[in-house]
Structure formats: C-alpha cells, structure tokens
Length: 338
Image (cartoon, rainbow, N blue to C red; front, top):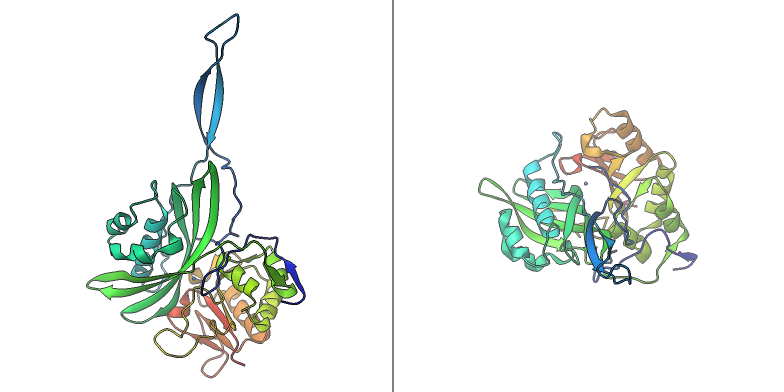
C-alpha cells in the first residue's frame, strides 16, 4: 500500500482466507503484548545454603505466579432481542476459552449443553495455552430470523504461558438455531489468527487506529492492515471520532458474507460498512430510542455521507438513509451503497 507506515499501536495478526489479527459489558483496546500480572500469587521456596558458621542456613526466594482474572459470565440486558440465542453463543465461547487444562475441549462443550463435535470447529477460540479465561466483550447480531441467527462475538482471551500473562481478542461468527424449547449453537466460524511480523497501514487507517477514543478488536485492525476497508468508511469514522468515542465490532472479517437469510452480498464483504456496538462507552443496546446521544450519532452518520444506516430507530422514515429492525437493536451499521 502506498503512503503507508508501520503499525506500532498493536501487534497485528493475519487470518488465513479472511485476514485477521491475533487477535454487537464495555470494550477496551486489546492487549496483545505479554505482561506480568500486577496482582500475582506468590509461593516461597526454601533453598539450602552452606556457610562456615551455619551449615544448614536457608534463604527465602519468592517466585511470582501470574493470577488470571475470574470469569465474568456474559449477561444480557433487558433490551436484548432473543437473549437466549446470545446466551447460547456466549456460553460456548466461555467454555472453549476458560480452562485449567489444555485438553478436554469436547467435555467443556458437553458441560454447557453444546454439541461436542463443535470442538473441531473451535480454532482460535481455544487459547494457545492453559490456564486461560475467556470473557465476552459483546455478542452482536449478524442476522436473525424466527429460528436461526448469526451472532458475531468478540471475546478477550487471557492465558498464562512461560510464566507470563498474555491476552488477545478473538472474533467468531456463531450460528445458532432454535432446538426444541431453546437455542443451540450449530456452527462456529472463527477468524483464525497467524502472527504477522511486519505490516503497514495507510495514513488514514493509521490515524484511525491511533485514536484513543476508537476501540478496534484485533480482527478489525487486520482488516485495516489488509487494505480491505474502503476510504469512504475511514473518512466517515475519522469525522465521527472528532466528536464521539465508539467501539467497532466488525468491518469485514467475522461478518456473514451475505445479508443474513438472502443471497445478497453484504456491504461488509465489499469493505463498505462498519458496525459499532458502543457509543461514548455505552452499549447501543442499552440506549432508548429517544436517547439523545444515539439520535445525534445517527444524524452525524448521515451527515458524513452514509446512505445505509441501521440502528435501534429510523429517524427519517421509509425511503431515507436510515432503517431499523431487530438485528440492529444492538448496534449501529454505517454503510455506503454508492
């Protein structure tokens, strides 16, 4: 890419097929560099030391062991549409990513009532090492019908490896279906990370990635690095970032290729759309349809040129740039048709 510069804000990862980084609660920027846990458990080891005066003398050596955060299971708010569908997806991701042992994936799925066969599709949703904890950042709808749904879920994995705490965000499109009296995960489509040693961002993408008020999961960052996000989207987000903080869920990687339930290619697949699940650190799903922050943000999205704006409310009615449905109750979709 021309006019590029090396990414230094976060370590990028590349997906095989659909690009991804190694990596619709509140989101925080992903941490990909190894860190030592600030609150660590300590054990004391007695090491013999011989001296002329005291042959059996000992010294105390403190060995620091990183302490994982406790699992905080995702809970839906009262505004969620079909919360049971999202709960089914969240429990599967938590089970895959929270463990004390590197093995036993099928057993963990079985324990939450999911099909053990899904272990073969889990991919990056199983952390690289154990012990580990997976915390849902947000499960956002990518599509919803009476009996099926796409739930694009972002999770933060934290694990201990080589005596150090490590962390990354992972994204996956989970398909769930109504089964009897409840919802069940039927398919998992994770975005697979592969370490990328060098990558450049265009000046616009770099500026967006560097904005302190813009939260980007690892998958979104790698989309920027791959150059698959249209400049119209970048320009719109840079303009919005001058007045708002917001959390991106997906650009392209992790989103269904087609508009759910149809054969129409999604503008996400074309690189012409972005989904935002939180505005000014507040999840969109918690905002009322008369929320002034939400209404102003939707108006601002139209003012920056978007002609495809989905959200919890349709401010301009049929035929306008805005639209609403159950799928967009939990996020704002900003797309460009022309």
